[in-house]
Amino acid sequence: MIYDSIVVGAGLAGLSIASLLSNHGHKVICLEKSNTLGGRARIWKKDGFTYEYGIHVLRYGEKGACGEVMRRLGVNDFKVKKLNTAIYENGEFYNFSSGGLSSLLSMNFLTNKDKAVFIKELLKLTLTNIKPLYDVSVSEFIKERGYSSGLKKIFESLSTSMLSCPDTKIASAGELAHHLRNVVHKRYAIGYPEGGFETIINKLVNKIEEKNQLITGVNVIGLVKENGKIVGVTTETERIYGKNVILATPEGIKGLTGIDYAPVPTSGISIDYALNTDEYKEDRVILTQKVKGVAMFASNVDKTVAPEGKSLLTFFSPRDYYVSPESQKRSMEEVVEEMFPGIHSKVENKRVLNLLVVDGVELTTKQNYYKRLETRVSDGLYVVGDSVKAHGNGGEIAFNSALECYKEVMNNG
Ligand SMILES: Cc1cc2nc3c(=O)[nH]c(=O)nc-3n(C[C@H](O)[C@H](O)[C@H](O)COP(=O)(O)OP(=O)(O)OC[C@H]3O[C@@H](n4cnc5c(N)ncnc54)[C@H](O)[C@@H]3O)c2cc1C
Image (tube, rainbow, N blue to C red; front, side):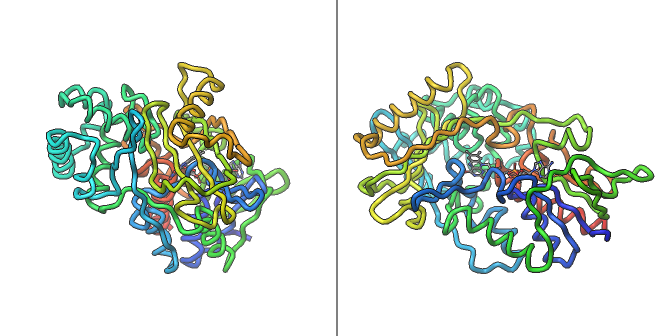
């Protein structure tokens, strides 16, 4: 049998492209090497708690790429809760944003003069060509604009939280500008899907399985080439033929294709605290520069992720290579205790993840959108996932790459 499309990998990108093509009527097979679905967005359940793999939020909520995938699939019960953000600084929480200019104006962290400069900058970024900024670092951008220390902090926090790249000397100002521009246009910064990412994964899986096959425990070890064209894949036990092969294995592109493409990913430490209390009512996403990171009580946004009377807090910090993972973890715990005094005595279960790959590509000037691998590699061979040429960061790139790939497959057969 010859499939229309073989999709390798069942992370967010693989599940998205497989469900889009399946929905279009393609004969699709999706192969996943592990026994779990969702890749780096997979969930884990223990003692009534549902843990995301680190904090998982959606850029622009349902107005982002995931929402677009759901719309194209005809899924009309996909709901996302808009999140507010706050900055933790000097023992205080300051409102930051939920998206749109008006919410940015409510930031009580900045002086009125800083706010005026920030709004002017956002309007400028919205109205001008930002392409040249992709090769400029965030710190060069801040320096060139002569920003105050308050505005510098805002840009540093955004670089940490929205680009997962705390080192502003390498983070791309264009990538950040693109995001800020979307926040203003869409009036939406981030959201959390009802039921968490498990809902997204289930909806995509259901769509594929309505008409096609999704097989776990299958490791694809090579590509089949005939007359110079990719015509299938090799697994450990067989050859499978297809008109299109779509690799949704962002870390495996180089190994499977031989193309010299292996961008530097982001890495980080994530700590989950399953708490025996629900006394902490904070429902904003907290950005902090003290230990650069992001914290969120998922259970205060969606009650289904923790048992009644309990709660779930996650703190994520991009890896700081100037200190050991152990010392970074200790500093993270100190900040959590400072923000929420007494919290460590209420921990029922703690999960610490030291992750070498968080987002498939770090959004630096060297790996910016314009320098990444196009989704169509050659006749019949495509790549999707969070390391290729699509807009966003992490999951947003994964979903956008699937939308790009779908367009290419439709155009090229
Ligand atoms: C701690 C953490 C926090 C994050 N927070 C966010 C967030 O808040 N928002 C956001 O948008 N993103 C976030 N991300 C990033 C997001 O999880 C990823 O961008 C996204 O899941 C990547 O999806 P993908 O399909 O591109 O790749 P992957 O999830 O890596 O999927 C690839 C799949 O391919 C399979 N595979 C690999 N090789 C083979 C093979 N040879 N044969 C068969 N199968 C194979 C793998 O097992 C895997 O299932 C976070 C990631 C982490 C780790």
